Amino acid sequence: MIESTLEMVYQYHTAIKVILIIILTIIVNRIAKKLYKKFIHGNSDISASDLTNYKFIEHSLASIIYLVGFSFAIWHIDFLKPIAQSLVAGAGILAIAIGFASQQALGNIISGIFIVIYKPYVLNDRISLRGDLRGVVEDISLRHTVIRNFENQRIIIPNSVISNEVLINSNYSDTKICRFIEVGISYGSSIDLAKSIIADEIAKHPLCIDIRSEEDIENGAPRVMVRVLSLLDSSVMIRGWAWAKDAPDAFILQCDTTESIKKRFDKEGIVIPFPQRTVSYLQPPKEADV
Image 1: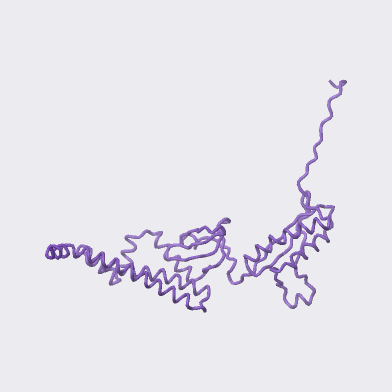
Image 2 (image 1 turned 180 degrees about the horizontal axis):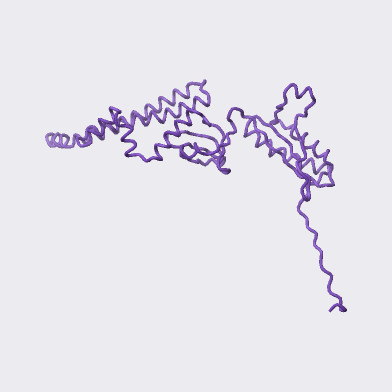
């Protein structure tokens, strides 16, 4: 019994070694990942920019561990030893990658490196692209960027694609956001009263911030700017500039002030027009004209 077992182990020793090496590689990767995450969470001084670098290094570290582990496993297979030696030595890594990986995959890796270096966005930035894709950057890996939209869905975009897109980054350099509060009033309503109500409702909201400089305040510049935009077919369009410290506050500020302005308009007699049509009927023909 023992002899048969030893004979079977000897017969399949190469396969057993390969399997053990692969299992050990997976275990080492998981341990390294846990230790790395513990280090990141334990360091409270890490900024958003540094966190992006650390996250990218985490993915790179995992790739290196798998590359070394699988190369070592391949090295134990006789007919694959030349490939393994090239991988371990590092001399043939680029040639093998170009031969076996697609151009798109290499482009994603290079684009990911450029994203981390030049930082058009970092983790937790609010970005939008292509008009309808909006969300918070959740992860940047070697291959793709993960964006969590406001419905808690994940948008996975290859790095080579997002690096060629025109982005709107709400957190780049300055987090302050301006939202336009636009309301149309009827031609019979008081423009001055409507402007005063809009400015007052925006200014008294707790999330509204004052962006005026000391010089602007000394010169009597209003805290909230309100202007008449245009004269439309049935309304006078008025815009108020509402400033908040960041995008989430700006969204709440816009929703709340739009509601409060409508209530104040109703109370003060300011009319918000709606589409109206005048229908006229042709007179029936007279008997003499028939």
